[in-house]
Image 1: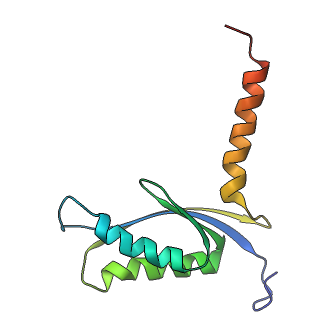
Image 2: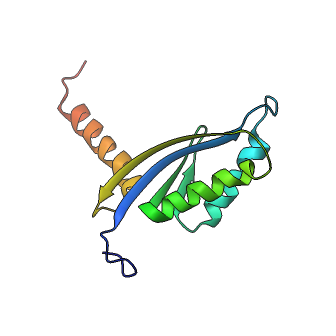
Length: 116
């Protein structure tokens, strides 16, 4: 439960890409402005080549998504948003745990596979 609302913590892992349309081939300057908002949010985040991942409570994550979107939209740019959410009540640290679990499974399979 979160103190302020007495609702359960809805851990949310978001994969987010926000970019303008019609501004040319290079979008890095625009994307950098979006990523700055995400990094300044205080939520756990990682930026990769195509998406930035954010982890936190649902309401906090969605507030950051909105604020990051508005960085471009409020300047009049047509703004595309790609968003994928994994909401897992009662969990935390999934940004680290999910890839670690895949690595553990692959290591176990490699250990148990017959030699070639």
